[in-house]
Length: 242
View 1 (cartoon, rainbow, N blue to C red):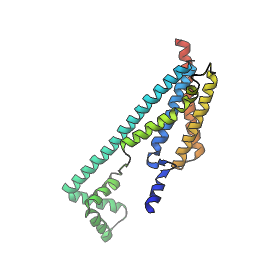
View 2: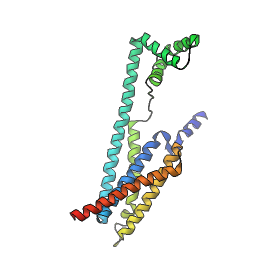
View 3: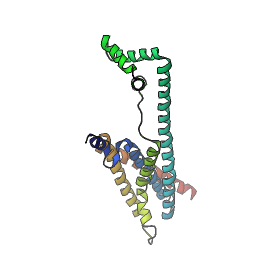
View 4: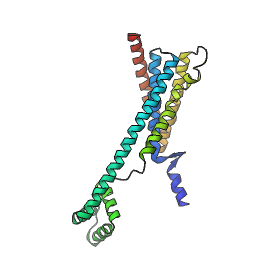
């Protein structure tokens, strides 16, 4: 029963809370960058097929690039933790007295004195694993990240592609129809993207216990600014080059 309760606390909707940041920021980045491509293509008055090709190419390439970066970032953090922990084990085994004094100094700073201080130091230094864990947390302020590089990269890529595909939906579903109004397609894409960003922004705010309205406004503002910049860059380049 207690295990089920703990499992429930680690979940938000169907997400593992440990990976919620990867999902949220991957989704926001995917939606903003893909919509920026759409807006830039619209500003340059490119055709529907070009919008789809550029959008999908960006979606896969940027999603893969972001997930690879996330993989190596998480792996580097885990490797650094493991290497530092191995160093602490070596110091405990080969520099025992110095490490005992470091434990004593840590608990003196916390207000422990006299016999109680010596008892705490004796208990901690009697168990090598507890000793090293204490040094990692109290001296170095390092904690183990339980997230794996493969899972963080996978969640990032999945959310990037899932949410990032939304700005393209109106173009994809009308690609085979006769003479669709491209202005209307861009409007639909804008509305869909705004909705996606609002949902992901609210998800971020609820999961992190922040103001939901502020979270939605922040993501919409960032997405809007990126789209406006891309649109006008596309428009200017179209006038100069085409």
